[in-house]
Amino acid sequence: MNSTVHVNTCPFGPGQINKLAEIGKVYGTDVGFEIMASFDDRDFEKKIVDILPEILHHQISWHCPVRLAEYSAAKGTPEYEESMKQLQTIKRFCKMTHSDHYVMRFNNCVVDPAKKDDMLFNALEAYQEIVDLFGKSGCRVYVENSGTIDEGTMLLDQDEFTLIVKEYDMDVLVDIGHAHANGWNITKLVEDLKDQIWAYHLHNNDGKHDTHNRIHDGTIDYDNLLNFLAEQTPGAEWVLEYENPDDLGDGLLDDLEELIAFRKMTVGSFQL
Image (cartoon, rainbow, N blue to C red; front, side, top):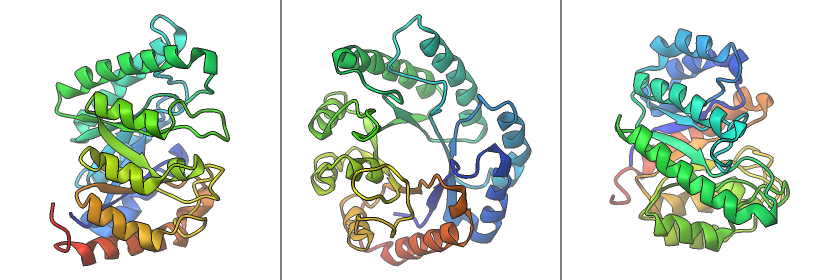
């Protein structure tokens, strides 16, 4: 387990993406970046290109778009075509940034129970297309447990998610906040999938709403959870995934420093 902690770029938005360089200068290679693909914003690509020379020495991964991309859409639909179009651009940037993985969600949209089976079928087809596309450049695909009951976007419950990723031998990113908001048993989820878990999204909430609070602002006990995650999956990446731009100041930096210090302290304590 290395001490690198990753920061998801969602709260920065294209307008503040240049702050990645500032964070990188402070923490060096102890920080990495998970870039939220936002190529639907016309300024995003230019701003990423401008900042690349300053962040290329950090570990960089890419997260699938959450707007104008829907992997549960049927082939031939506008949603499917737009999703595949964005993938070509994302693949190019994954190669430019030497990214070793891409985070995929099965769906972003509200789930109609009558269409659930079709949505899952489409998402699994899309998963295979993405694996084939990114695999040629050595970039793996991590499947994230996405969606929440509260928003009507949870396509798979815990048992279904576990079954699917085991059946297809998928690499997994566990979003702790999503799991908590859906009432999942996080301990069991990690124990069941620990050989396939390669990363975590870390954020907190009240157990019902996916609010992406800071790690100690909510009902998840991160003091105990971090020890459990480090012991069960010592090689998995930790990604702070906040959404509120208000958390970009001292709050984000305090939490980042805490996680980096924790990982440095536990390096060597748990065997890979």
